[in-house]
Image (cartoon, rainbow, N blue to C red; front, side, top):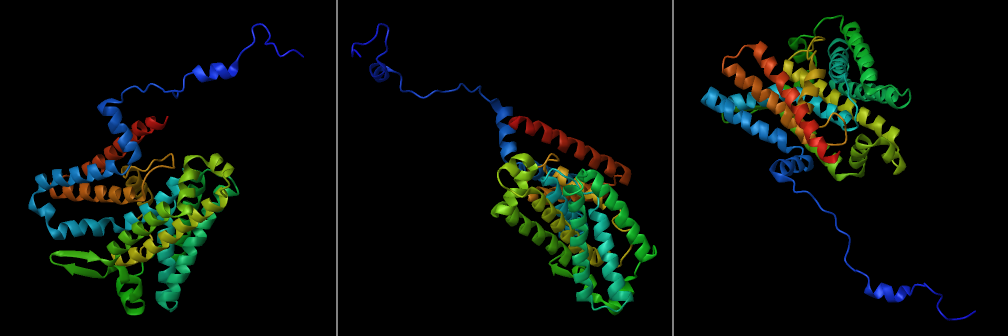
Length: 358
């Protein structure tokens, strides 16, 4: 074969030496002020509820004056949102996986009835009664998770069905009768433990309020500092991609529902101290109120985005609105009206922020 280059042949090494060495670049259109805000909120979804909370405190502080900022009123807001806040923490776990749980309040009331019946009417030691209620909450959560992962029911349908099941069990076990606070005090005062208060000046904090804060702090650590928490976010963002990454999505989902059930059992214990008795009709709207706190807290209903602390801020926003409007003399009807618009605005903001990743 001849070493003479063929006509039209290419001297690739010579051409390589003279070729461009700069990397390819893409033109980015300037974001502008609105676009920059949108990206900041997308990266920090908790900013929105924090801003709303601070603004609402300032507005109602001006409207209601010193009464709103009194230590007693501020501590009362914390007391009022403590149970819904704990339920919102459980709800957040489910919503982060792109699900929803309509049974959280029913689980809570059922576990309070179980612990009350065992301790007050059957003489079971209160610690054992509480342990049974914790196990019951985990079992109820497992049932929800099993229906979602094994039967492949949509979370909305699965938990809508179990909400009715759990509520029917509440009526059956309780006979539609409340357990009086005096009977609890006489036989099982431990059940009202979270109703005890700590006086700090004019402020009065209940142990239930402290429990709510501890629950949120613990869940924040689990979701942000552990591999399991990252798996929860990945499942909510894209379940199929999470499976391809080697995550056992169904097992993790069942664990999420079981943890949510356990938190509902904790809320059951705290609710007894908050109400002072055990009523089968208490917190009947807790399911919707917990979802309200989550949505207002900036946690996406589509899953995979949001901070657990957003649910805490969302619960506080609802409490601040209710307290401020009440002090301002606004009728309860218009309080509900205002909360409804808060939900609509929160979801609209979430949709607007999600366009960044579209």
